[in-house]
Length: 384
Image (tube, rainbow, N blue to C red; front, side, top):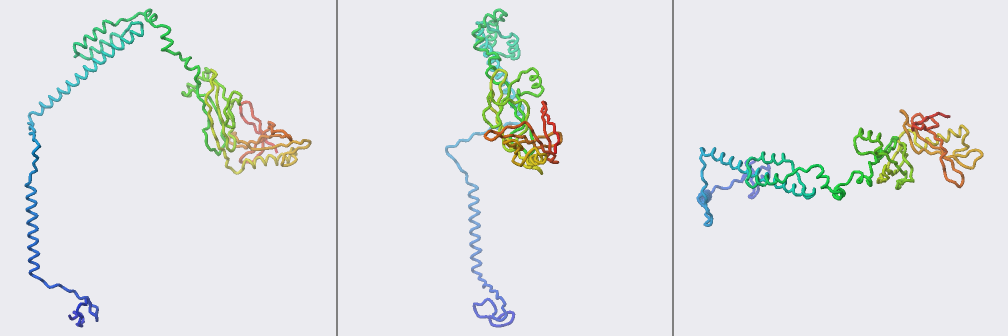
């Protein structure tokens, strides 16, 4: 075979010209008999498919055990009659339901009358108007239902006041009724409300406790004026169970720095102790001055003034030492202060607070002596 491009001879079985690389396209020879056979096979397959489709369409599946039911045709002019018939059936059902409910109600009234008559010395009473209303609201009643109502109404008698008082014995009152005072004698009156809620805080907070009735603020104020929810609140600062020997809560107090756990309990006016309520706080102040820096500033100021001999709290003529530690913070006006109580410790004895309190302004670092009034307000006096 020669290459159509360069005319070189292409060896048999090669698909590319060895000289110019031209790709040779080989076209198979046409076979007329093969084409006729393919057409014949295709026609046979198409005919068979058509015959199968027609046969399946003409097949009818028959079940010997099945029965057929002819569905009656409804003429258009008969539709209103059917609707009217359906409405009448619904109305009949409603009447039946009404009669049934009325009859049950009458039976219930009779039963209640019988039970009441037994409990009140065989004297029963049912308002006649209630029975008349039942009868009038249901115009269609059965004969037995009317007879039951009439018989029940004949037995109804309205007792006078003396009869009722005589029929109710003292034993019945003691068994069936309990006075409010009896129920509430051994039940704690009110509930304890502690603020703020337990959690983490980074600014000074005041802890407060009060006994609440659980009602609105206006109602609580009225009840507090009438002394309905008076009581004594006891608390501990270490989370232990408070009792009547614990500290008595009188006014709100500052939340201490660090982690703290308080337990509260109150004694109501009837002498009942409430359940214990515990709250936990974490107070970590974040500012330019730390609580330790504030305490050291007070110590340095006292050494400068000659009140202390050294940073260990020694004073002239005493074997004891004074210590200063910031334990809490307060807000006064628009200022925030580190509060530093003074404590004194003798050798071999415990540490006791002297009652003197110092303060450091958290913003200006000014030093103060602090006095607290009877109303809980703080008075700050500067010292150098």
